[in-house]
Amino acid sequence: MGKKGKKEKKGRGAEKTAAKMEKKVSKRSRKEEEDLEALIAHFQTLDAKRTQTVEIPCSPPSPRLNASLSVHPEKDELILFGGEYFNGQKTSLYNELYVYNIRKDTWTKVDIPSPPPRRCAHQAVVVPQGGGQLWVFGGEFASPNGEQFYHYKDLWVLHLATKTWEQVKSTGGPSGRSGHRMVAWKRQLILFGGFHESTRDYIYYNDVYAFNLDTFTWSKLSPSGTGPTPRSGCQMSVTPQGGIVVYGGYSKQRVKKDVDKGTRHSDMFLLKPEDGREDKWVWTRMNPSGVKPTPRSGFSVAMAPNHQTLFFGGVCDEEEEESLSGEFFNDLYFYDATRNRWFEGQLKGPKSEKKKRRRGRKEEPEGGSKPACGGAGTQGPVQVVKEVVAEDGTVVTIKQVLTAPGSVGQPRSEDEDSLEEAGSPAPGPCPRSNAMLAVKHGMLYVYGGMFEAGDRQVTLSDLHCLDLHRMEAWKALVEMDPETQEWLEETDSEEDSEEVEGAEGGVDDHDSGEESGAGD
Image (tube, rainbow, N blue to C red):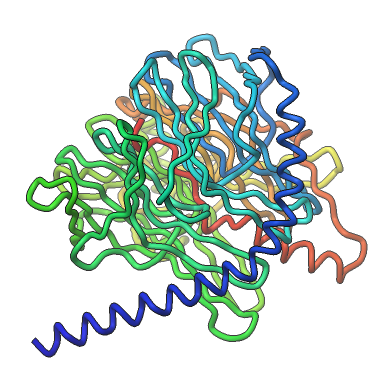
């Protein structure tokens, strides 16, 4: 009895602390958000000039990250909305809508009157009702200098049959946030977590909300049991048994003045209705078996065939007090909720190349590789090194790690000489974080995202696909265009440090890893 009392008291104390922090953040950020509202209103005035829907065939979209990529429920189409781009000096936010026709391999820009304001790190979920609806909640807007932020708490629906946007106004919903996660569960949208940031403060959430798609009303859920700690950028997916799995994510806390410490979470929880009642929910801690992803943030998620959750890429940051460096990934993992088991996605590769690969592995020296962020294994994968020259003459080196067939839990190889020896599959998407994922007819599509090359952020605009049934090799549908890789440096070193700091706040790669497939 005494233990339970202490637990409850501790829980209430944590709630009070969170409430105080939210009040503090809210007060300081209100002025920032008022300043940005004028800029958002200006953009909305420009959008209001559209009076009719116009569909324009176009080239692939410009580089971006933290957008949403969703699958049309009735057509062979992918729908790209929003996102952000940072060129070293300026942060750009988008509210453009693009449609990719899978069969024709063509892009169309769809200009619709009165769209949602520009944003990134929002959530988009597709439901099949009425010819298909794309529901969008929240997200973030940043000032051009990346130093001020506005977090949305609005809810929008795109009616796919009529190509019209509608803002759905309902009280009692979540506070403004980005980096949250949202899935379709029966006739509801279930939302979890996220974060809100101002120039000086931030807060992470672990609250749960439900939006009823029949009554258009929000309700805050109060699940029993011990749930996840506050976080953003986690995996959230619906299981075949009707539960909702939450895995991983990112959060940070202040360890001393102006110094924050980030945490890459690797725990997993199940949220499900208690005793079959939809008004009463319970959290349960899960301990899945198998080969789990190494701890990371900025990973991307989609629903794969057979109700499995697909996990791609991300970044493992090595944080010190004044610096941050990261290792980016392009590996695949699958979570099978039926068996409560993780396994690593392995590419088989074309059969004719298997012998070459075996010879290449045989000649590799022992101990020529080391684990990355907790990875373990005995055989090193092939590392492809490619140099891309940008328009301004800057050489960007892209490293692509190709996992050896049949291997599990592989470390990253530092042996670049094995490239000539090994007949590897065609390189797929390079390592990246905050990419957009979608699965249609058993095909995985990966678009955009970012990685870092020294102090430079490279934002991507390539599109790759992979047959998840065959698991043989990636196919490049849109290659990365070097001419789109613009990077501007500040001449004044003091201004430069301020700009980079502001950009990291507005373009928080770790907080807002994109999830696009859950609920599709």
